[in-house]
Structures are given as C-alpha cells and as structure tokens.
Length: 158
Image (tube, rainbow, N blue to C red; front, side):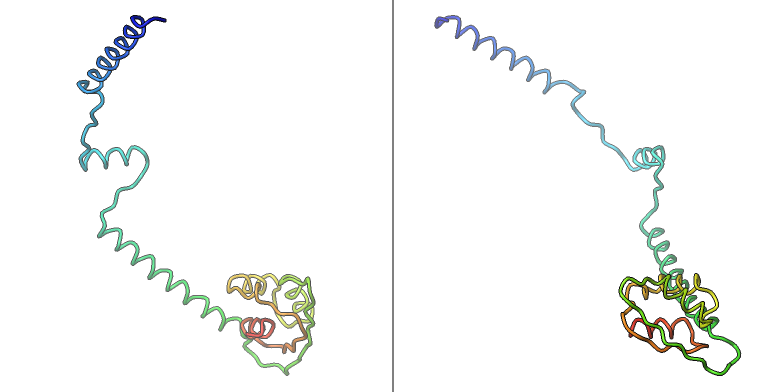
C-alpha cells in the first residue's frame, strides 16, 4: 500500500461517517414521542395493570391493615373455645419429647392419651402460632383439660 491509497481509504471513512451522522442527527425516527397521563393509563390497562390514585391506594392499605388486625383478634377467641366446658378430675400425663420428634408425633401422643380432642387441630394450632419451631426436648407434665395454648407453652417452655 502506498501513501495515496491510505489517504483515499481514510477519506472514504470520513465521508461515510459524515453521511451516517447526518442521517442519525436529522432523522425523525430517533426522537421519542412524549407520553401523557392518558396514554400511560391506556397502555397500562392494555397490559393488564390497574391504575389507582395515591389517595385511593392509601385508603385500600388502611382497609387491609384493619382487616388483618381483626383477623389477628379472631384466633384469640378460638383459644377460649378450645378450653373444655366441664371440669373433670384432672388427670396428668408425663410426655417425654426426644430428639427427632415433630409436632405431629407430639399431637398424636396427646390424642392417644385423651389429653386433646383432635391431633390435626392441635398440630395446626402449633403451626399457626409458631410453637412448632420452638418445641423443647425434655419431660413435661400435661394435665387433662388444658387449653392448646397452655400445652403449647409447656412444651415450648414459654
């Protein structure tokens, strides 16, 4: 390659860059259209989203928090129902919880000894209130007629 061919090649690159740059700079396709609120809402609705104003959204959040508080109060009422109505002579039972036992095993043993009415309901109670993860190893004294909460407090040492 000689000096002349290198200059011609460089001049060709310069002309190409100028042409491409002018098309890029002056073309209308490169400019984005401004989106207003109505177009944005229409686009979101077409995509399956729901558009809500901030005030209405905060009202919805307040309603949800009120409902969750009411829902949290309901289980406290259930605890009262779990207590037996008539007082029988208290029969106590010693349960030994060893390593590897889960809440299902414990509730089955308590049901066999007639200390609780329903093993599944007691197991669900332990799961709902987080007692199933806090069960301690050891020997515990459980009396007939105790509520689910009292039994759970004993076997979790709470």
